[in-house]
Image (tube, rainbow, N blue to C red; front, side):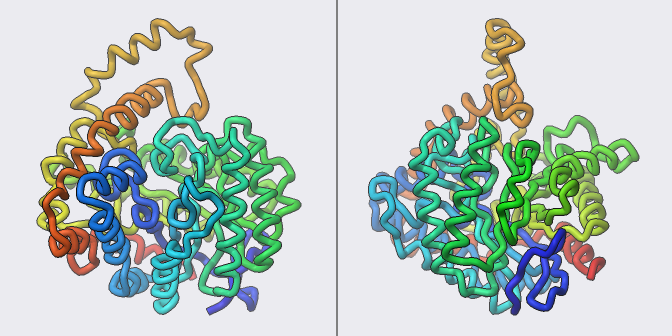
Length: 473
């Protein structure tokens, strides 16, 4: 066990020996996400709906058991057995602060976070604390848990002030814990000005350093951790800091423009996308961390006979990305560790109580493409095409590209607002209704579907990660 720090382009231990962090993100846990956990919309919506449907006591019991079962000692032991040494822990500010009672710390928020940090430490696994959802929403997506498409974090200073306050509390709580590799103060910001994010980073850096002068700080690039082009020389005022890219490849998703065959042109595109994201850091000799990346996978219940072929291609994307990272001795955190079967290293059994309960509902969600992540909209594309055509007809071309372009194209914006916000909102109560009439024992069994012992392992993915971890020492 050694406190980590940044030295030039490397992460090193207290003896200045290089440490390459390889691991995964515990997405869907203390910041639940629809495609990971199987609900529609945002976490705050389903928590409210479940409380209305079955009462607050039962609702809180279910969610607490979900948090307990999602990651336990058996998970940490398995993770360590793969040769991986770091888990990024995404969490939601709502665990620590209430919007109706701001700046009053909820000590209960530390219950499961402390537990998992300690479990990981017992298996020689570092952790990185990742504020995935900040007050007001620091980005335009569902995973910042604000329910809209405007990142109000950047237009209301009080949201930023509350986040500074929270990081002061977190830094005070964890400043002496050497198993924490560092703090990731804000996941995937989308600041349309490209300047307020830098101002906020300077503020949060100073606030953390006033309390904790030693832990590494990991700053995401703007526009979903992809763009550092406006950062200038800001890094000169930020000590012991690394910079996080999120290196998702279009080849790893259903929206891929072509089948992936790992030819010279595709490998060049893979490498160029990665190099472009880290260009600012390389020009200045700064430390880079890949905080998120990885393909999604086909499922037999939806893709049928094409499943094996699709996943063979996705595994090749994975291998080719890892080859790039290993050559650069890059630290990384793949997305993600556990889910209901779309991307996780570990995933729920289709015959588990949770998956059985929601089998028809999940099929409906898939058909309606109400989750933005990796959606297959083929069944509903015709429904939304007239709306898209209407926008194209009425809006002059020079006004169609709204930030965060090019991450959101015109078609993406229409789908995010129409499918992933509007339609999903109508499904929230339907999701909650599945729990009506369940007693405490039944709720416990449903939550226990997320236990490691009840889950399946994505063996192909895990073997590739293990083999890769052995190649660079």
